[in-house]
Image (cartoon, rainbow, N blue to C red; front, side, top):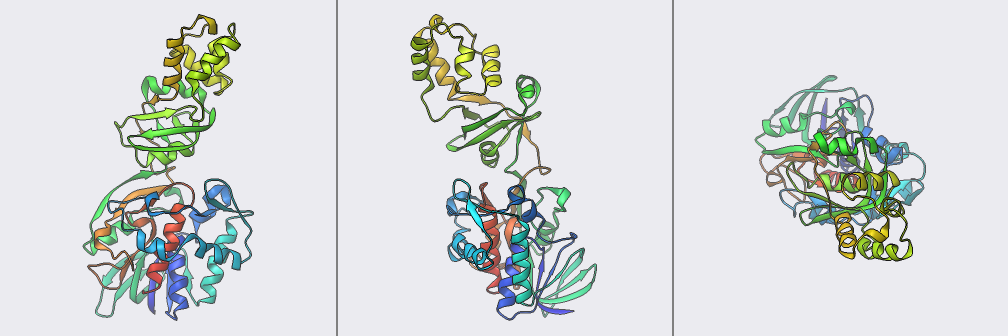
Length: 392
């Protein structure tokens, strides 16, 4: 089979690239080794697909080159994708912090992309693994499970290593290396953190206890959102966000109640409720089981009148700067994204084309660009896919 553009990977980035290239009149084939397209789209946002974020800015992306994402993000914005969603009459809502979700099902986003592919004449083949890729004078010769394909342009949209149960592999990185591209070290991002030893023992029976708002800090980076204790450590949006910046050995601090000065509040409680025990007083601001555990291990629980002002000040300050000694992460098994990937030094930021091999493109998660939690990674997929689709 001969095509103008072969896209390997039928996820968010690959489908967007195929649509845009097909709309230009290019003959496009998309292949994917999985049995259906858009698996990550389908599971995103609890099945409602957090498809973009109104607050997208290059500062919300991690990359060895923090400037790389600027061009693609500027040329295909959240509003461009929203226009497609509205054209297909998919109802959506803003949940929080600019995060947009489908009112109904993420299946509607996949259906929209497939409808757009059909209108653009794009052909899609699933359960179609790639066995070999070779460079030719005319472009690329690709041996797939369904036969040989000759393509002028080859787009790698194979994703990262996160959630291997959904078919994630390192195939895209291997292809990049085959064609001389550097691949930066990869690790799990947007992932729960694990505790070990005494640090795990202190908290493991708090599994399921949630705090609606904490501030998680590593160095100068901080995120405010919810936190959840798990059997093996800590999770929740604030932890997932900070996990992309945390490395083993880094000092992780949690402000357990960032919206109020707890030292001043505790002083007031000493006057208002002198007979109340500290654990019960803290239970008004923190989950009761957590308040009790903190008092068992660190703050001896006594009636409030028995605390000196300096003691309450110290307790308040500790609650705003609580150390969590993480030992690792849950890894790719539960990670939402993969940090690192194909080095952006070898890719054009405006077209996503390889600087080493004409006609070869890298888009989406396989590239060393990783967004925050909350729709940012889908917007990178749409934007990088659109950039490549305009020229491939």
